[in-house]
Amino acid sequence: MSKNKKKKEKVRIAFFDFADCEGCQLQVTYLNEAFLGVLEHCDIVNFREAISERSDDYDIAFVEGSITREHDAERLKEIRKNAKILIAYGACACIGGINGLRKKYTADEAINIVYAGRKDPIEAGEPKPVHDVVKVDHYIHGCPTSNDELVEALKGILLGKGYTPPDYAVCVECKLKENVCLFEKGQVCMGPVTRAGCNSWCPSWGNTCYGCRGLLPNPAKEGQMDVLEKNGYTINELEQKFDLYNACKLEADKNE
Ligand code: SF4
Ligand code: SF4
Ligand code: SF4
Image 1 (cartoon, rainbow, N blue to C red):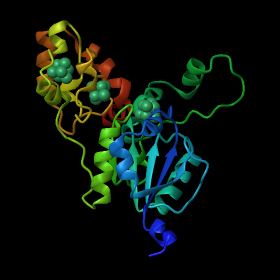
Image 2: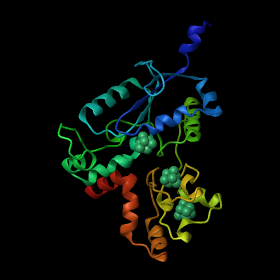
Image 3: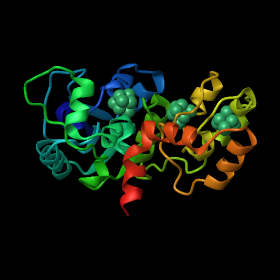
Image 4: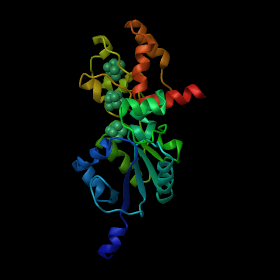
């Protein structure tokens, strides 16, 4: 087999970004050994943050960021057409993430808050997660994403098994690590209703979970209420935490 032929057989991977901070793509550049092992089977053909090559010939598209403008939606549809597999990559893409806060304001209010005093026209459309515009094959959650999960997901996808993120709560991972619960220390934590997979990253470092991996499909809301009441917190305090990453879903639920 010629060298060129062998290269062509590698899976071609492309990264694209929309409305976001590009922090999830940046994570990819912090290569670890396991990731380098997976990359032996892949060619990265489009990755604005790291390489100058640009190609529309790819098998797997990683899409980072929320979709906020019509021309972004059109660009995303083209990416979907080109890709055999499309992965929503990071909280902005998977759940709308922190961009969802825009939904709490009118476009003018949002522009004024962010760009106070700026006179030239700015487009500030409503943010959408990627699955609101095109079909998503796999989700890699987090703000930012973790390379361990990226490697696990890529291995599963390359082996044809796919990847399904955990559907249990961050608390499960937190308990397994034998952390003292932050509610016991007088803090409000979203772990009970947030999708695991980060190995309880924040509580393990003494910080509360803000729900960056999105709400569980069937969160135990009543159990969470019991915890809140027991610890003297109000639903309002919890809602403010929910909103930080999950406003797109919560606003959509309200309109159903
Ligand atoms: S999910 Fe977080 S780190 Fe990733 S692009 Fe969005 S804001 Fe940045
Ligand atoms: S600290 Fe948070 S994630 Fe950990 S057990 Fe308590 S509520 Fe759950
Ligand atoms: S603990 Fe919560 S906020 Fe922190 S990384 Fe995990 S899901 Fe995200």
